[in-house]
Image: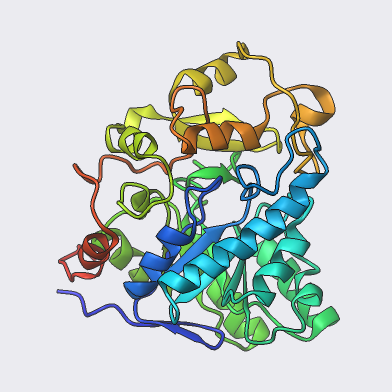
Length: 364
C-alpha cells in the first residue's frame, strides 16, 4: 500500500496534493474547472489561448482586436476564479508560440495568478516580464534535457533565477501538441530516462532541487504512483478532468471523450508545424486525408508561425478548437491524451480528486 500523496511546493506555493490540472484550450480549462480543482487541494490552471474569441471584447471584423480581447477576457477569468477559490493555487498557461504570450503572462501575474505555466516553445525571456511579481512561480514545459538546460542557463545568466518547477512531457501519451515525434517510440526515449537526466542535471550541475511534474497518460492513482516511483514530484493531468461537471467545455465535448476508445486517438497535423493527439471525428479525418471540405480564413493572426495563415496549409487551429469545445464535436479539433476509457460517467471534481488521491496497490 502506498503512502498518502505528499504535498507539492512550487516556489512559495504549497498544494495539498501533487496534482496539477492541465491547461486545455480553447475554454475547456477555464475558471470553473481551475477553481474547483484548487478547492479540492490540487493546482488549477486556466488556459489563456483563445479566451477572447467568444468574449464581448472581440470584434469579428477587426482581427487586430483579438489580442486586446484575450487580455481583458483573461482578467475576467481570473476575477471569476478567485470568486470560486479565493485561497486556492491558480496557474495560467501561456503558449510561447502565440503572439501575445508575454502580454498574457504579465497580465496573469498582475491579476492574481500564482503560477505561470508555459508550453509551445522555450520561454527564454519570461522572467523579464514577470520581474515585478516575485511571488509568481514560473513553470516551463520541457520534453528533454536539452530544453531544460537552455532555459536554466539563459535564466541564470540573464535574470539570476531558475524555474520554480518543470513540467516534463511524456511525449508517448500527452494530449494536444507533442514534441520529439520522430523519437517517441524509440526504446531509449522514455519519461523515466528524461526524469533521471533532469534530476541529475538539477542536483549535480545546478546544485538545486527543481520539482519535476510529469504530464501525459496519467488517469488514475496507479499512474500517479508509478510516476512518483520514477522520480517525479508531481503530475499534471489534462484529459481526465474533461469528463467532470465543472469542466468549462460543452456537455457534448465531455460526452465525446466519455464514449471514446483507445483506437479513436489519432495524430493530426497542426498549423504550428507539430503533430497533435486528438480524437477521431469528421474534422480530424479530413485533415489527415488532406481534404478539408469547409472554407476557412485566419480570424485572429494568433500564432507567431502558422502554416495556415502563411501558406494556406492545414487549418485555423483557433477556430477548430473553439468549435469542438462549444459542442460541434464533428467539425472541430478534439485534443486528447492517449489514455481514454478511464471512466463510465461524468463526475464532480470532488469525486475525481478523491479517486485520484486514494491509496492503492501498485507493482514496483
